[in-house]
Image (cartoon, rainbow, N blue to C red):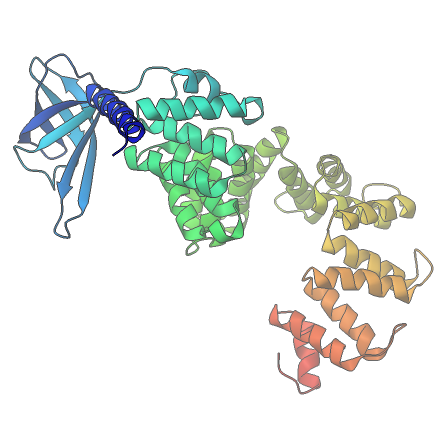
Length: 449
């Protein structure tokens, strides 16, 4: 062994020893004296070295010779022992418990504290206000000093998420969750990455479980999402009663999305008895909180006279308020008011502008309406090419009514080249979505869908 290698080895050994000593100095040890249902009494090796809130870790070798880690938290410290809140079913008297102190406020907290984090010890820092390089260095330094502190893993995960490294963020969040299973903001962030993240990372069932757990821990932002997933059968079976449960809690907390969703449940008897009066109350409350979908719903109920006296002028006003805030369905409804003179003087020019605006923003309903306007040739000069173009745009977005109308034009060669095979394909697409007219047409053609 040459001298240079020996020196490097010695330096490496010294630094390793220092690191081990530093890590060991952070933890205390104790022995389990007694076990209760959800707690244990731990005799401390060094009195006065432990405080409430410190994290407890007990490592056991299971039957498969793998390490099974049981974690808990110190809830009371006495003269020579501590009471630990922990799952006791797998523990035995005499086992060794390792106790890690909760880390004090470090630079990582100042630079990277997560908004709405119940474990934060510093003022939160918004995503767009983070100093990426400094935060990364601080988080890694904090984890080097306190590897068992979940909030530092969470802070690193949030930073990696901001840096558009979702897989790495998930791994950091999962480590935080191992150390602190009841970590609301981490559960919510993990759920969001599994729901909205890159396709290969999505898992709606896992996301739903994380959202539910975060909501159960009273994390407000998770409640509307788990309510919606329960209502829409996303990531699991449809559960209207669960949806109502979460929408009600979030509504009482002033969440406008949940108020509108709860109103829809009351209107449609989803998981709760139908009550139009309560539906109207929650629609109005949500609209007063500037929620555009609720404004659109109020326009709809006044237009149709649902629980109120039908009033086109009031409907027009609500549609206008929602459209002003960019609501697509309201924009189409407002255009229809101008086209038909409902609640406002007829103005076909404004109607066409609104239909075109909604179409450009992706509304298949607006595309279909424009197609029918050009096909009818009443408001504008009849133009089969433009009509077919708008029907095709809406059909490509999966609109069954547009698919049927395009199929009719193709089958008849109505202003466009006749193409029976293409027509049948569009009839079949619409029929598979339950479009009755398409199904009937295929039966007449003696074709299946």
